[in-house]
Image (cartoon, rainbow, N blue to C red; front, top):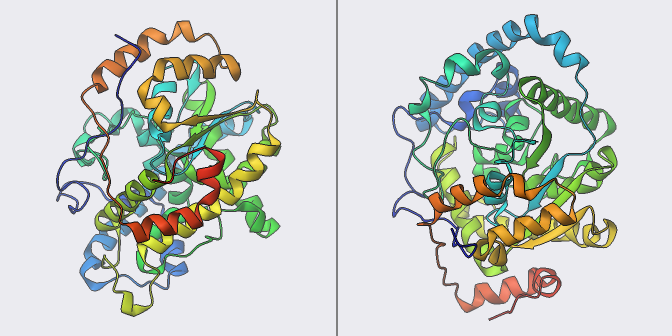
Length: 389
């Protein structure tokens, strides 16, 4: 196929606002009992009465996950303990809706990489034991598509390891999905340099154990993607001295509008509290949350660009990536020493052909919103040379 391919997402009319179907699993159905109770406790147990039944179902499933985790420990604990986490992973960074998922899915087609799957991230406590006998018959519990668009969902597709951290009780910004009326910026576990040493050690231990389990399931160079890792790049660069970083960027206006849609859809589908929140209750509005969170992310990106050398970090604009993904990926393989792109080019071309019908949404922002973004996200416009019109 030609290298010029349009590869963004296409949204079904009501996909971003629908509730989950009766047989679709909620995000919180994958927690352990300890993680579920810790999340409820940290938010004061403020579950709205209309969500008590759903929360109770999640709690019941958490007991099953806790028992299966204990069952997995018996045959696997020695292999997990012996496994070491390599110091050369590839991290895909960037704001939500900036193309990180597309980059993750295309690079994961390279068999040399080891990307976490949706099953491993959403059922993170016992996937070594259960993945072979649960995944074949449980596909019906997955949503038909990702909340903000019509991209397919599947147990074996690449996924964010942040979800595994959240469901294993390490603490995560993604707990805000359950309790959107309590949005806060910054979140305690988002910027690791703000954590007390004991809590940081617990967070890192939880994450490393998950990574070791991934490598027990299948070897490969770790390929990890999450916007949340952008806030932690300094720790990641220190812990993984041979790591490579890909930073995805997108025009701020499109980033803002698409991110609003993302969080809004997640809150509608997976929250334990009514959404949208009543501004009279003193809740942080979704718009303010997105603006403040992106500003914190930009504050982290600025020193990142000045610190890491070109052979460890490459900036990839969403617009050029979706216009010509093959050229972009070939350049990444060369500049970051990711391997021989020729070995995986054919697989990527075939995947791009399957995606060729997708188109990006278009967004119209009013002038007051544009003015706020120009002021608050000034660095993004200037550093990545985006026009302000």
